Image 1: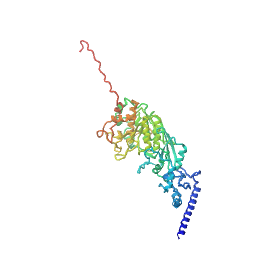
Image 2: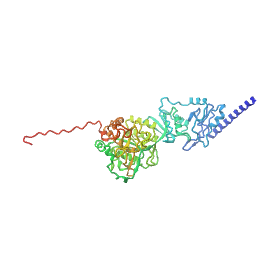
Image 3: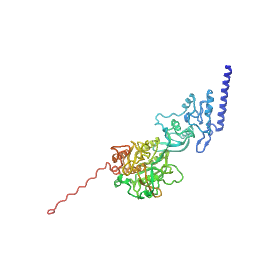
Image 4: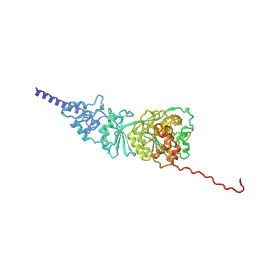
Length: 522
């Protein structure tokens, strides 16, 4: 009886191994095993999920990469004799050809072999780029990888094959001395899971989602809400800009505006646009957008309106999609905008947008500040209960909240210990495309005004560093909230005149000449 049972078990195992081999061969013939032949490719989605299956006795996978690797050590299981019945179902893609976002069981010996053949994550790597569990502000199927320039093209191709990525875009960045890639991940793999797997590869300096950011403007009103072109903009007096502009007007200071498309033909911006750059890579002509045009006018308008720095020059950088008033921009496009600004001599970068904490953008901002560029950002329009928004909350950036005509905080303005200063942002007259004007609100406006003030400071004191600019703005701000620095206004309402003249020698008082009295005179 025992002999018959033993023979039955042996026969079952042998039959299973034969079925397994036949099944694997069947998949290999259908998909052309990854021993030189190409896998089937779905247009626009990269390598298709129904992948070649290898007969690697040390531990197969669903990616055609020998010895493990890929997401979760590879989607497959080792083909030991005792485990063949479990292994075969694990190698077959689910219905519809999609890969499930969970690691398949790998026997201990398979895991060990896999680890031995995978590049190991460097010990000096920074924090993980895996997003928080509740983070949704990202492109749902893309990752951004930062890779040292020392990595060869062959190694890049191997990385792509290992993780079954589709290359969308890449660019070398002078700010960080690395190349940053935008890839599409395989269908069925979540971005957090992809980042977690990829950042373990020693060839990758950093991996993260391609985050989404939004422009910070709201409460749009028609041009009829106030006389179009009325020069009596209340923000000018609040910021003491007329007095400051008697000393400096921002002559030839380059201010980069990373935003939506700017109307360079608007009369308010005549001659103000030094260069334009489209970081989105759109081939078709794109109409100028209201937000970008408004921000540029708050900095450099010199027609019916008066910008904070009317003689400044604008680097118009389009990194945001023009659809709607609150257009979206991505990590990758913002990085390209920062790189362009730094490479083309920007002294100030205005960022009137907000979004999640972004490690790649943080590294570029840190490099830009060290390069001597003053960084200014809108605090955000999510209100009192909002978590800190970025890039404003980045320590390299001057964060600006918004006030109204009565020096009260704009209701939707973000608050927090990272706020540096405040500026008017409620019901502000701005220029919009096609020669128009409108009244709108938002922390975007406040940030642009402060960027203009910094341009005045830099014209007056060209050697001023970013840290000195921040310290000067804080030291000269008008305290309008609780005594001292507070989470609503930071150090207080920005004062352009005090900031521009800070450290100047006081003017020498003119002494009236003594009059010699003539004899007989009264």
